[in-house]
Image (cartoon, rainbow, N blue to C red; front, side):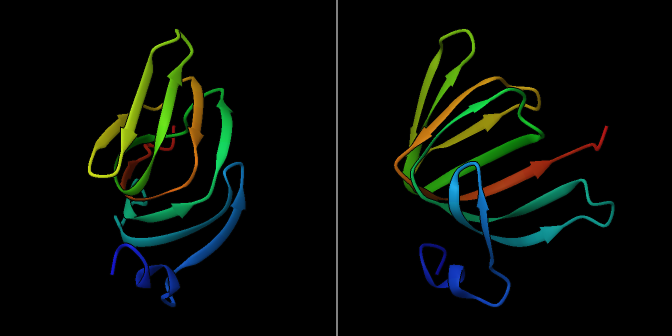
Length: 109
């Protein structure tokens, strides 16, 4: 279900952002709004990131992403692998598209 049907559920939110058309399916949100978990599907993109807005762990179900840090370090993450991006990370997010589980913490500071 996480690879397809869930993205057509009533809880799925269609978005258009920096990473093109996407679908977000929030599954859990803490009472204080700082912790969120869910599934996310997005198409191709190549986006510079000045400062990542939250701490995020992600596990890719399909596709993947290439994360190129401002210092030139390159991390390629593909389906079946996970990665963590800390709040404030700077770099470039490049993908041909993906589906992922995500867990986000945002202290709202």
